Length: 198
Image (cartoon, rainbow, N blue to C red; front, side, top):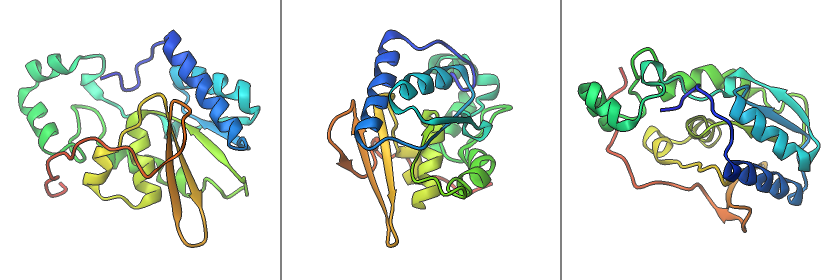
């Protein structure tokens, strides 16, 4: 559970970030990069921007989930030291909150105002450089996903989502490793249904 802890990008991560930047350039570029201020996303943004040459802005609203006292622990360690909480997480991954941390609804609340005003300045296109769990929350916000749909969204490091806003709809595509566009969202196998919200 890395959460808000940091680590430098590996060589593979650097290559993936650069490839994502090249992809954005090939798609017509972006006017602005909104970036989580954590070190790994900042490094990613500068590699992307070596291709896009966009304005860069930092937004704390895009930071990764706060994993609380689980930060820095492996999944095996969490399961060993917090067996009851781990079981709750597996049963209700959307609403479960790690000790002293956030659940996905908390993340939606803290990012809502920022996401709602993202295009207030008439930017034609923007890119968000953020994290895997926050990506789920962003897709939920814009696409109106249910809780169970949100949980099964995937965003590996070599993937870029493109949301195209039209008068009728939001067209969603994803690109893996700079490849051809694939319609919709990348998903994992369905998780158990979420319980009632607390």
